[in-house]
Length: 261
Image 1: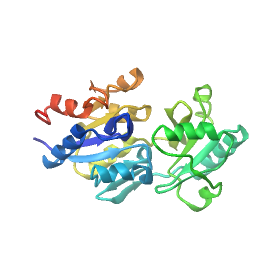
Image 2: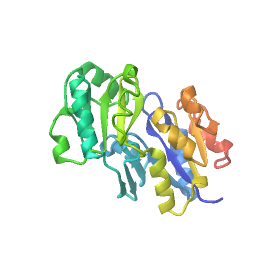
Image 3: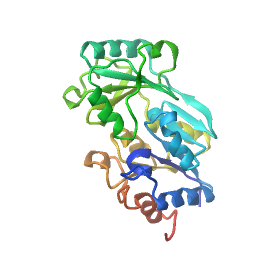
């Protein structure tokens, strides 16, 4: 069988609703690696938030921060930081509008404000994390791969035209990721595929969230989990069972990469 690149989102995809890995998923990844395929995480999480999953699933390759960073064999091969002038302008406007923001580095996150702690905590708790510590000066001392902006749907697209170098991607009812314009999991996956000698047609991706849409559409085969919303499903070539019911394993069997259980 020809070598393929398999890219997996974490939350709602690799992990079930209890933030655990299904035995079938663990077995599926082992079988893909045994067959010689390239297997990677593709997540909105930063490295320190993805590390428990990276370690548990024995990933050597990982795409982080919605594509702002990529690692092959644990070595960084791609880096796409937020444009300094625009992100500072956005943060100032968010501050004026009493919108909390957090800076995301590879191995630490720090919030810049404390307007609505409950809103921040609700969003962060949704994937098993907590509100970052306060450090408004983080942007002056560290690389910023993405920013979290804690606002709801009433401000959807409000900032798009004002900040043409930024891309606002919602992942929670009360929070969006702010990443470089043109940056996405899709862009970085295709970059990594090229580096390892594979084409777009060789990419098979699995996801469930709004930040997976471009990845699913850009892949040779995009697989949406059964727990994905209807909007996300529109970008996929295939819908599998949900993340609590062996969705990854069932899709790989249907695609002919695995047999039995």
